[in-house]
Every structure is written in C-alpha cells, then in structure tokens.
Length: 123
Image 1 (cartoon, one colour):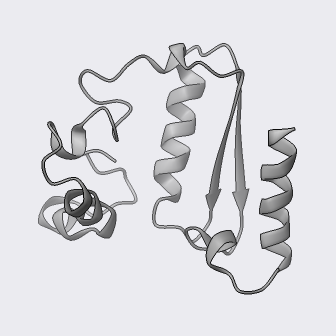
Image 2 (tube, helix red, strand yellow; image 1 turned 90 degrees about the vertical axis):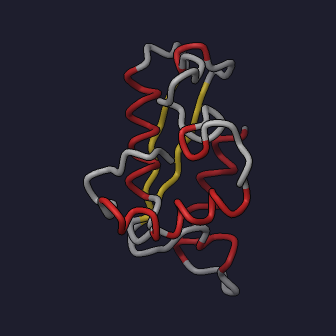
Image 3 (cartoon, rainbow, N blue to C red; image 1 turned 90 degrees about the horizontal axis):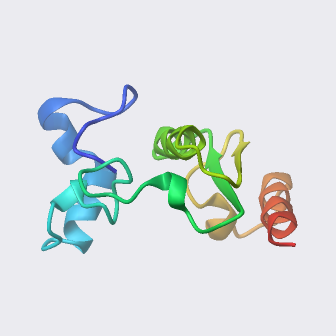
C-alpha cells in the first residue's frame, strides 16, 4: 500500500475509506510512517532497495477481481525494474477475488491452477 493511490484506486477523501487503506490502519495503528511505512510500502521513504532481495526467485500472484490486483502488479513492476538478480514472475488467475484459493470451499479449476502454480514454484 501507499498513500498515493494507483490509477485504479479511489482518490482524495474516497481513498481514506478504501478497504485496504482502512484495514492497514486498523491492524497497524501505531506503525511509524503509517501506510507509507517501509513495512508495507516497498517504494516508501526508507524502504530497502528491492534489488537487494535475498531470494533467487519471486512469484507474485494476482486475480482479476481482487481489489489488490493492481497493487500486486505494481509490486511486480517495482521488483522487475529494480535490477534484482533473481527470476521474477507474475501469475494471474481470471475471474477470482482476493485469497479465493484459501476461501473457496470447493476445489474449482482456478483453485487447482493456483495451488499447482504455488507448488511448482516451491520445488
């Protein structure tokens, strides 16, 4: 997150009522820097360089109906453009909401697709 909304996010006073913004403030009310803390804003002041990530590969998963989809793509673009030495991959599932693979009570084709992607990434 960031105090600067992305193109697809609400602007001005509406942003202050945007669920991801509200949730961050609720769970982390005393975090120095608030929503721009480097703990949650990888492009914020004082954030460490993403080029220095200590991993050889990174998988960013998003789903098309997720409120945070564009934030995931933003993060992917930041890491990819940072000069990080590892492999960076973006994986998108169409027609699903945030955390669908965890919240679904059924093993749908998209749940299988996500779980298979996560499993193959780990091996």
